[in-house]
Image (cartoon, rainbow, N blue to C red; front, top):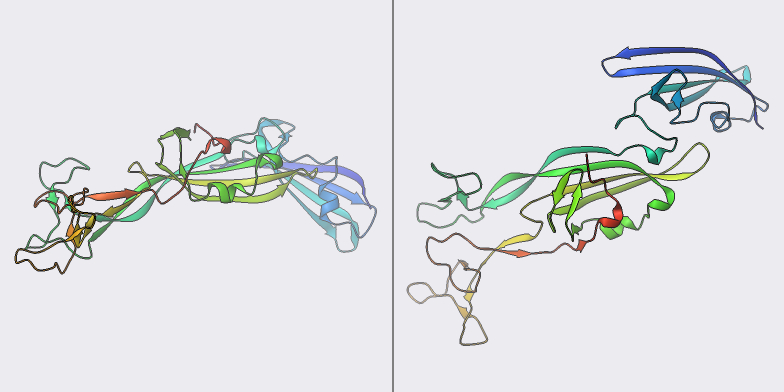
Length: 295
């Protein structure tokens, strides 16, 4: 069971606002009715994927389709090779992992509790108006608003030996432990968060294994530590090992938690709320991933 002959029959092309596409049609003849598209598309005389068009070196063979010409002629096949410029630009080599990575950026939202609002004279990121009710008490539950972070998405092909499926466990949901530049963005420690890693196993036409991988990194310059409001019903007792219950002006136990100052004492009136940072995600060295450092 094999291919007997490969004959190019015609060429045509099209130009549109999306770019140039060119096509080459071949007739392929096999010697067994049991041969299918696997045998046909593997024919050595057909153009290889990622090979240049013979008369246009700006485009590559990015797709090959095969179908029997007629039901009565089960040994004859029509193969169409489609040439165009792949996303990310033309290749400079014949292997899929030599294609440049595809990099995109977008904003991703998340909900954050806020206790300050803007008023005249404020600067961005420096709100001064406390969000309180008319009795100067904080709202419970707190006011929430949607904020946005930058997401870097990377899609690329990796050689079979260059990617380890165990990376999904090692790096998924981790922060960057060290300073790193990804897609032209300088990411200081704990500012990057690996939100998603994905991988699909693929094969070249000669059977070589490679991986189609993707990485989504969220950049939060406030770091990905959990910020938890410092509050409670007790305050630290410097003189003793146990905290003391917080009392109201009449000496009664508080019916709601009091804000604390970050050092275990009741927060003085008028001072901004204190949020305590907790790094609940593991920090990992991302250097071995070989992420692109430029756009």
